[in-house]
Image 1 (cartoon, rainbow, N blue to C red):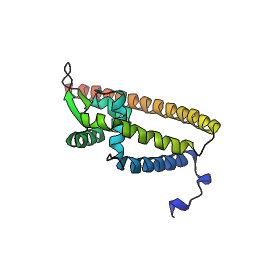
Image 2: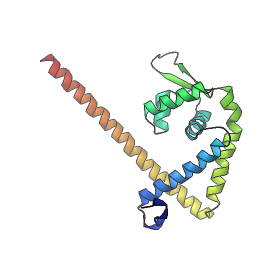
Image 3: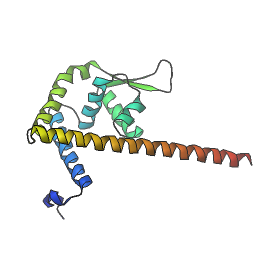
Image 4: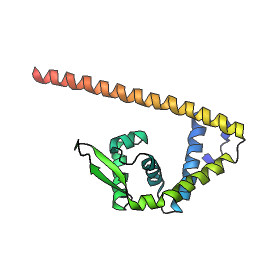
Length: 172
């Protein structure tokens, strides 16, 4: 069945939210490509403009992407001159991500692109609808973020208990 012909009013909330997210992502991708950025690069740069020098693993967690995905994307961004990665001065295990002059030079244009898309999305809503949507999405975001964090902690606990079990078996 052609998914584009499906009546959006008949979708579940999660499915509709996923479809809208893909549409917004596609629109953002198109706008960012117009200024020479890939979508993922724009999202990473946007975060780094707020927290330059963040640890690579913290960046991956903040953007809800896997560490290998972050590594691959950051390697391409480093190759293209957008960022540089350096070991932390006090903990060599930590890799920090820093913006380059090239990324700084594009900041105003990229932020204008983000604002332009925001205006486009907001234009189809009344002020009241926009406010309700923001509050609702923030609630969903908070709930899902908490669920992910709880799941991560549960996996860590399970992994640690398995490690202890394995070590116990090795001693026998």
